[in-house]
Image (cartoon, rainbow over all chains, first blue to last red; front, side, top):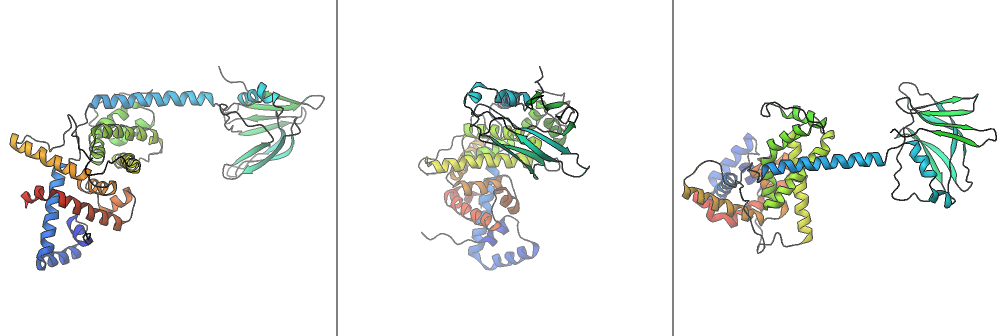
Length: 218
Length: 203
């Protein structure tokens, strides 16, 4: 069966999508074309019938239950989010606890990159950027390198040669706001946005790294 | 879960309720749900043509809205924003149904189930015979719309029920103005065929 040919003028007229000139012109056309006029009248009647019988608002069945279910689901989501946040809290303590896991050591892939760096204090409107002077990895199979990610405005530490992190372990980023170096003790301390110490790196008399990490609250 | 006292829900503006909701006030969000559930449910019901699914999808829309509230900009209309979410949720459902090919849009299998307790007829108190006639016409229209493809059903609901302009429909779907007009044209031709005896009485 041949499909009806599209008449956009007809539906634009029907839906009030024409400007005054277009409408006047189409009205004139209707006067001289009885078939078009009949079609237009039918479509107008169809539209009116549909609008009359399809309400834009309906009574919600079991409305109170509907609302209460939404509240229940919101509570569940918030509880899930809270649990998730606790599980993935980005603390240095968690990172180093992960590094000390038996599976990690046993695998022989444990590595710790200890970085000695100077954080160039940024100007007020300049992006922060760290200059990495040197790095140290106890495990020689692991290589450490860093780069500055402009988009994230962050210095990224890459450790190549580590075993895959188990899927159940969640490690997320830690924002280091600033650092302080104390040449007298050959130490570097990293601080978060609240000014709390996140990590302090130093060396003992034999040159081995000494690390102090922030312990989790509670 | 924070919740503040909201004195008279009717007098509280959407913006105020949205601000409180964004701050985590679930009671304020509950008032928004009450305010718009009837309109959102009507839209999902007209699109889906099944009470249970429409009910679930309306709820899904509100849940998605709650999650997306932090990104909602207060200079936009809350209902328009919510409507778009509900529309997308419903249309995604329709498309999945179509892909699954479960016969949802076959004439033989399409069944319109009127909602128990749902008002599908105009409000008011018409005489019993008129009410029955209205209910019959309503069911005929719902059944005819149920036979349309998701794309055609979508434009009919957006235009005839919501009264959106072509540009608004094109933005909502999204598609070109030409596509909107084309779909509206063919959707109406199909409805015309099925409902001729219904609307002819009004000519």
